[in-house]
Length: 108
Image 1 (cartoon, one colour):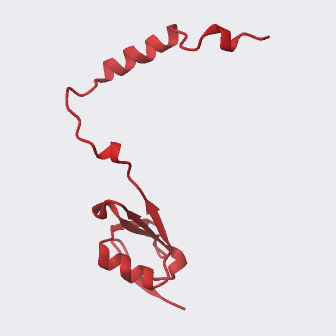
Image 2 (cartoon, helix red, strand yellow):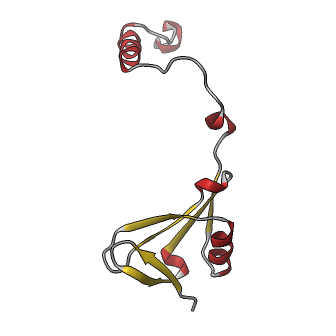
């Protein structure tokens, strides 16, 4: 059985099986990571996973979970940031306005 050595910031080196590790590979390389629950302190440890680490963990039998960031989330946005007051005003406006036509909600 494959044993993977990883490091917990609290406990130091720990030995894990591939099933105890989670490898998340993102379409943005810098957002890929691996995570595990420390077998000593039970803390979740999350660390970045570059291409070399992804390759090593994959060859060790760790299952890859793909993570795709939609292009819309990565777009540049311009203009002022929406304030908390604007969000609150919109929420209050929604409470007093029926956006669904009455004909769709009326019983036959």
